[in-house]
Picture 1: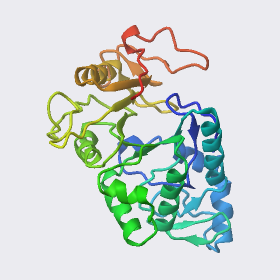
Picture 2: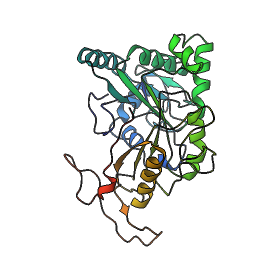
Picture 3: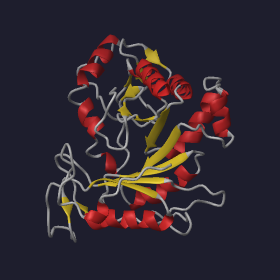
Picture 4: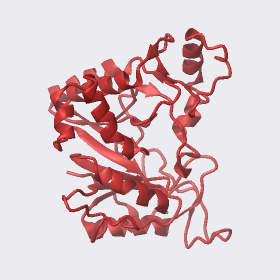
Length: 319
């Protein structure tokens, strides 16, 4: 957990557990996966050994065969920071950056002492924490939006998510401090996930169009409506879009015209847009195998690179 973060659109990061699985091309260079397989690997190994796993030295720490591991300090830290924001009359934006909050946990979950936990109980505990921290806006990003309503319903039916907050959410009145988002790195995932996102009651719905791997029409073939990104008959819509190219070693190319197109679509629909980065391998007028320009245009600490086109210097937040 971190009281601060280098993620420009959040104030705090940290999640209720560690671990996830790859589900689409956007996961290929996942930084959370790389951290789990390097700097944080010892947490998994210690927990696996304590759980009595014979393969604790070699058991995967990422993927469907990887047992998730419960976080320690996250829970108390969230309560502490909520109190600090309440005292100051401010609101923090918290992003659980190391997980997908709707992960199915196919190999289960244990705490750091090796004790087995019920995945639904962990989910319910997380929902209760959200209810207990009204001065934190929880930015819940998922590649599995289809799981949301069922997970809430299962927790409620089992008596684990018994808070009025969950009941109201299921009845169409979402919690005021929850923003629900989904990742759409290409057209296939936009067409698949955006309609699912629009089916989730939320104060704020957002898209993470990152890493942007191709040109994306946010209306696409999903019948979302016109103008772009507007919602279904009940008025559901996307409120915010974060867009950026891929960063880090091995980054795949991102044509800045793809980013510019997303920004134009957002402006046409009256949707706030946050251009996070152009990517480590940014190209202009890109054609496969024939990049006209390639260069590292990521944000240096303390400022933006001069190479950024002025019209892409957009960092908006929803109200």
